[in-house]
Length: 441
Image 1 (cartoon, rainbow, N blue to C red):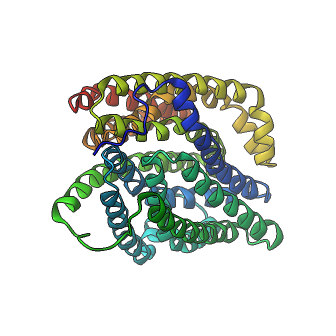
Image 2 (cartoon, rainbow, N blue to C red; image 1 turned 90 degrees about the vertical axis):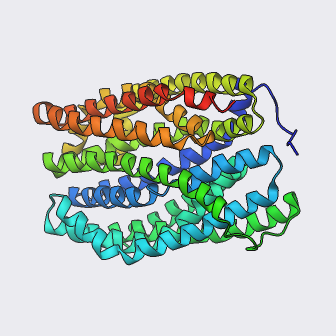
Image 3 (tube, rainbow, N blue to C red; image 1 turned 45 degrees about the horizontal axis):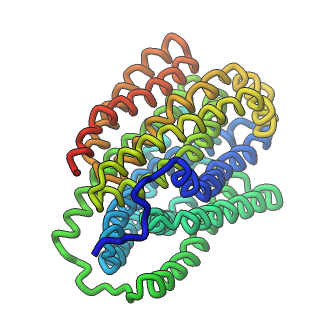
């Protein structure tokens, strides 16, 4: 049975309307990072910002590495939704929940190893290392809840309920900001407070929306989610294949951000702190532009489920155009307000001065990077994960090699130019594999 409640012709307006609620939720995510950075950047010492930078980079790499829990869910759910196979959608959710809990428990058990590797990898002071250890020790406990949130977001994106997925992320981010601000500003818990805020916010959000989702499935799909016939080898193999490719791709991608922190630490803790500040601008733009990518994931999965090539190509063209022009608007905003935002984030003069010198990179990267963000969404929706994995490996290896050379001769500017090239490599490699998606029709 084919789901008819969906337009055949995907216009720019339809993609934009699907993306609007995601704009607000995605804006909330980097806002948390900006506020956390601001909380640490106004404590008067670079060590707090440097420690938060390294610790969050490590935890982000750990958690984002399992981003397949969201991305894999979107593609499969969207294609099942096109066929109105609601029972299998519910089972897909439960299978991913089981996988998420097992992985989360393993990560928590490996906490001492994660802390040890982090201390050996980064060149920092003893005080900074202690702050890093504190953050990781607390934040790692939030992993089970954060994984469940990934799956729930993927589910709602897959069935094109972007308003619910957006509400979920907004609630998470709002709680995170409230708790972190309270713990740091009122209780003076600095790095510990930021990590504790994330921990509490994650569990509250996961519990609330898990209960909501159970009731949603009961009412909208009119089925009761059960664990019966959950362990089906063929279904698990499909999940494993898709998820493993995305896992490798995401590990490699998140390592590239860890690499930026690593090279920044080699240049000095001030540059490490500055790059943390600058990366907030990149993350803000990325999450804003990802609204189009997220909404397109479900659209692409649906058009492939119905084998409608014309609708697919229209969705691709319109979403890429929207993403690029929105990126231009973001760059213009940065051009006029970069210094004012920097002054809010940190009151340390040397960090402000160095940040001003790097404004050009923050302004020109968003439009260039918009293409790779959007292509990611298209490949995820198509469940074309092998090509995503291969393209990312090529891009990151190229980035690491080039960054070592350019940083040696041009310092931090060389690092940022390398990052710009990295976003370009991602677009070129995915474009090279694009015909693989067309073969699905």
